[in-house]
Image 1 (cartoon, rainbow, N blue to C red):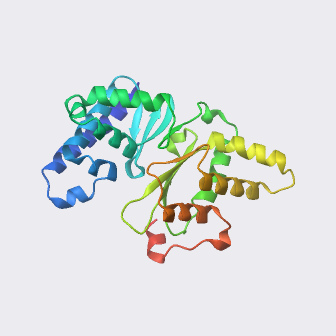
Image 2: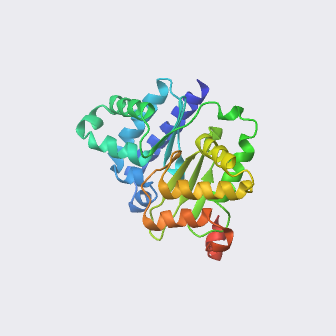
Image 3: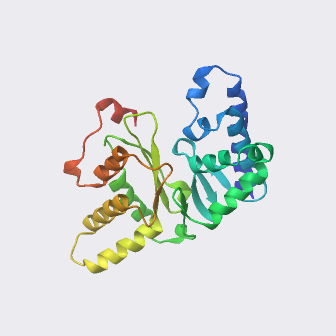
Length: 253
C-alpha cells in the first residue's frame, strides 16, 4: 500500500512538472525524455494522470527516470515507457478523453503478455541465497566501467533485473533489460555442459549470445540500432577488445 501511494506521489510530481513545462520556453522541452516528447505536453500529462490512477487503484508502480522504464512491483514487470507512450498515442482522442481507462487497459495487456519492450520477472528473486553475487557478476560483464557507449545502470529495485543504458552517436539512447532469473537458469545449464570451464568465461559467452540473439530474458526499451547493439556486445566481450571511453565521458560517469 505504501509503495503504491509513494508511486502515486512520484507520478503526481511528474504531472505537475509537465504542466509547468508547458508554460516554459523551448529549453524545458529539450529536457523531456523521448517517450514524453513523442506525446507532447498534453499527451504526456494525460498518460501520467492515467498512471497515477492506475497506482491509486492498488498496483505499485514507479517511473524509471533516465532509463525509460516503468516498474511494476506486483506482479514484477518492467515496461518500456516508449512502448506505453506509443500505444497510448495510437488510441488517439479516446486516450486523451479517458486516460485512466486507456492506461488501465494497456497495463492489463502488458501485465498479462510479455513482448518486446515488456519483461516479466520471476517473483521471489530477493530470496535467492546468492542472487546479489550473481547480479554483480552479470553487471561487471555487461556494464564495465570506462567503456564507450555504456551509460548508467540500475538494479531495478531488487526485483531480479538489470537495466543498462546504451548510448550512441545521436541524442537518443536505449536501455537493455535483463531478467537475472532466466539468465541464471541458462548459466546453470551451460555450466553443467562445460564442467571444466571457468564460470566467468561461461557467463560472458552466455551473455554475449543472449545480447546478440535477443533473449530469452532480454529486451530493450527501444529497439537498438546496429551501433548500440555493437556497443553492448563489445562491452560484454573480452576486456582486451573493448574501446575505452574518452576521458570526459568516463569522468562524467
